[in-house]
Length: 73
Image 1 (cartoon, rainbow, N blue to C red):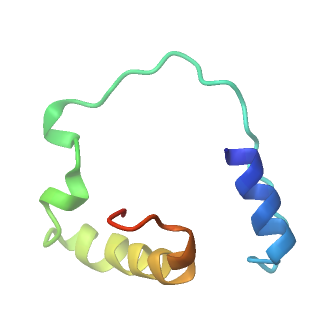
Image 2 (cartoon, rainbow, N blue to C red):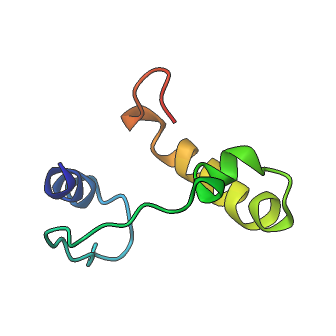
């Protein structure tokens, strides 16, 4: 899916520069502690979330609204 999305975004010229993200097989994964799960959703008024994360999320949602499934993020 990631490779397909990169191809689509490249074809659409979604970014001024080429996408250079390397896709590699996942290595061992350790989930974060419970208090870190859904941190942004659970702490939207924390200064970092409010002033750094929120504008990025809004920009992402606006730019890729057509790719988000109904009821999705």
